Length: 162
Image (cartoon, rainbow, N blue to C red; front, top):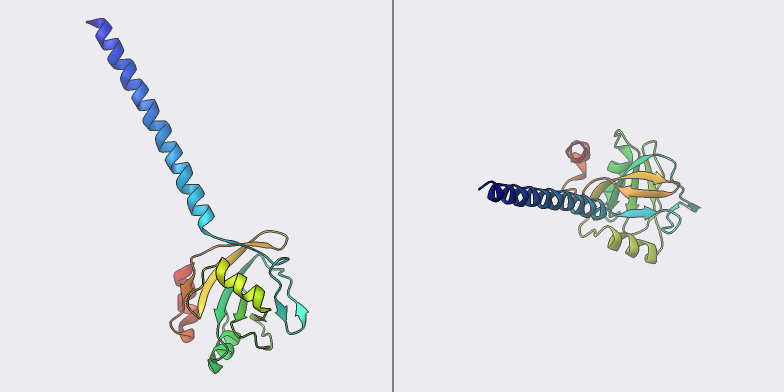
């Protein structure tokens, strides 16, 4: 009888080890999936312009707003918005706007615009998300991309994202 107890004990120990390893592997896979879900942007590859100058990021975090300048009030609302982080406002129609104290307005060529839209899977405008510096000019998406229903409620939406 004691021989049977030992084999059961060995089998249960083996199964427990197997399930423990499987749980660790599943947690690791999930973490890698979540990490890869957010995208990176290298500002050396994606060239954006402030008026005529090439944009070079210098802050650790930014709020990115992808918007349409065809809505005439949108650029003014974005320029006047004062949030905890600097804003990068990227215009779908690539019109030149004056930077404000809180907002840097960016534009780009068609190839960069299309690459940006595709990289971040932007389907609606205005859209908003955070990016965080990882090294030099490489930034990682730091939040989900959300559609802004109303630019007037921009500060409320930021609180939801944080």
